[in-house]
Image 1: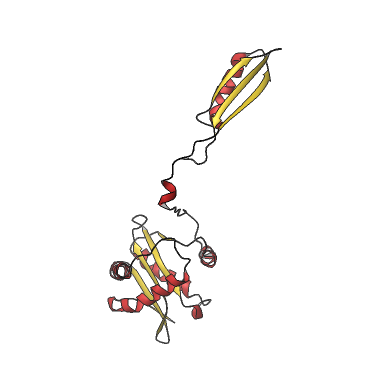
Image 2: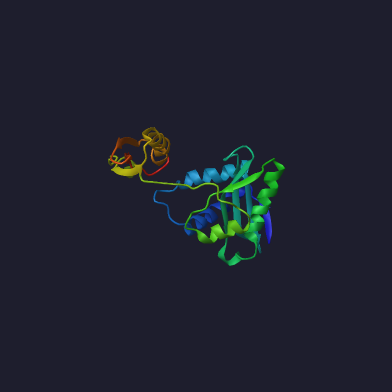
Length: 210
């Protein structure tokens, strides 16, 4: 097994491997980059990034592509990592990443970053075994869903009965703790019989943190 740096004349070799990788990934809900654009990205990584080919008996059985600086000046981002099904289980994926790490370290990089589809459980297990940790999630939504009118939020109303002759203390506690339930909450404190004070509160339910 031999791992070597790819040259520009290897782009024609790499493009069919890129297609085989994409064919194994879960499909996206939107079109992928056209072939010409994808080829341009591969050529740029061969020239400026890291592009490695793994060969066995003279044939390509794996490759890795990476570029510098996508997530900060000391990062190297791996966009593609693929090993032929017949060559898996022999540590080739790990070896390709090791070569990337060595090259990136010589350029002053400190971290390797990559994306993996949440449905690709085998790949997730592989990367976790190598020491990768989840740092972010990629979220996506169709634009039609985001352009729908916002539904009105339901209002919730409740009441709490407290037996006390200190109305100011009741008001102080309600004022202090109610915003913890909801920033837009409001309350009124009213007296009742036998030193009972009723705190009626209302707020609109929300989901999200933005």
